[in-house]
Length: 391
Image (cartoon, rainbow, N blue to C red):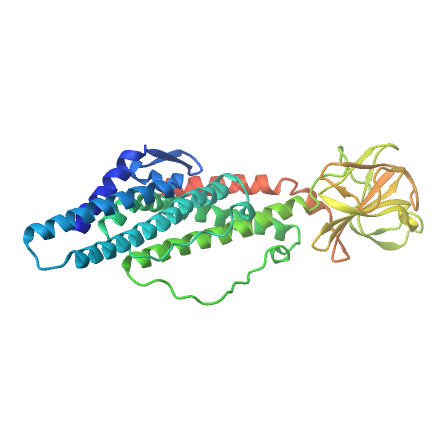
């Protein structure tokens, strides 16, 4: 009876101290608003000091009541025994409060973090590195009435988050699949950017039905987080794939592959494409990268090479002027040189190459997929709308 009264006292005081807090989620199409009742605000605001204060007050009142009740009943227990019992009760209740307070902090932090993960996947806000690995449940005895009362609203929010997480997982998988397809069309294996390994020491899940539910939720968000990591790496890598046109007005005088050599007339391999234009035509970096060679180099004449990482390189030959220095980071669309006719050239043009692991590949598929991420997002939106209509 003492414990029940004390628990009720705690709950009532938690409820009176704090006001309702709203969580706003965006599921990719609509805003959803979830409310957490005022009795849980000690959790969200981190009011550990207030909790301890009320726990001490409540324990003292309950202990005094216990002593008085025992005296009225005429028990033979000595005052010393009653005092010892009171101290034991205080110790137990303080431990309960501390455990609930810690669990509440974890639940509140998880709600906040899971909101960021869902928003990151659905809306592209934030990055996995900033959010961090999903917070897992803390193990403690949640059978008391006070624990159930304090944690219930947060668990309701987490249940709603789980529904949004399922949608986010489907969205991420669609975008991941479509991005991988686009990369393969350009002759690039997605595995070059995203590995598939998993591991780590084994740790058994907590026992019990409630713990099993928590473990299931933890696993769901770990899976979503891992998918988000892969998607983020892949989409960031796309920025470093040479897909922009190196000049504003694209036309070709020579394509990639075997051609008749312009000087000898014999069949010869052409490792890039030739784009004609007036001397001084601006030449732009086709992706983020770091400059390598920036100077005269054999038949290329004035040459700029850009290293885009993961074994991908672009070359810009026959320039009349080079506007970047060696070992300099450049951005997609940055001006790096001016068109010319230096080196082995019959007239003003840009010789443009894309190389993967040192091997020249056809640049045209790259430029035909200039907006890979945009295409993926549009395709994913169409697929999602089809799925919704089918349901």
